[in-house]
Image (cartoon, rainbow, N blue to C red; front, side, top):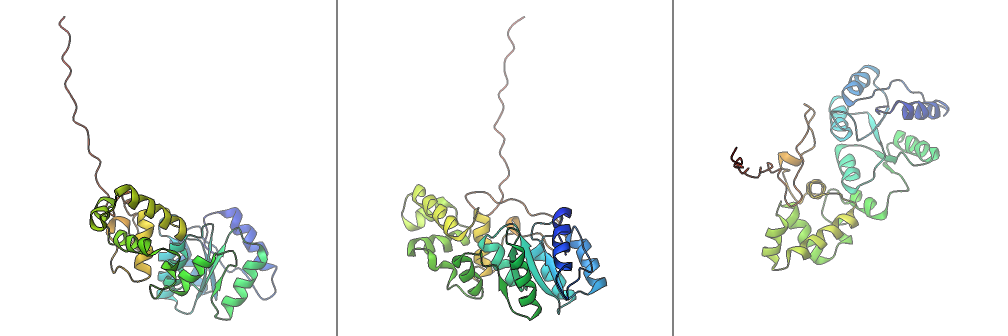
Length: 248
């Protein structure tokens, strides 16, 4: 079990050990610590959070499966944005459970995952489920969007700014921003960088700019993308004016 909240680990540990046939063989607060424990203990199942210090749970999932392909991984997360669920399944996780779910949901996830069956928490919306099922293609994920919204989604995924999309489609920039906000709301996204990651996960784009890429297994944090585009822009300083001193 890999989670940086000790109190949560204690509660989950107590619950799992109360289940017949289950035991917690190791714990870690970071992904890197978790990799050491997992390689040492070689568990059948791994519970891991996405938001971890340093390497995140998505990158860690890929690395765990690279080292131990037979391990089954369940994401235990506080968030359920579309891109998180799609990225987790695309990385090889077999299950996704929310921290707000009742203990019975975690029990079901453990049982189904142990049998080799994918498990998504019932609390996940239909949109999220269709996105996961369609993670290998463009169908499903964008079905909730209108034709115009899908058009803008594809342009935004190509790192076009709102101004560029406005010119390409001959519509007002304010109209573009309204559509982008609707797209984010419908797909559970928070910012433009999330949109690009989702587009990459369903094959609409083949590369993600380094400025918004998830940290790699080698470590390091990505720079934050700007609101209007996909690249982080350096802050411009306003020129200072010299003030003449009053005569003494």
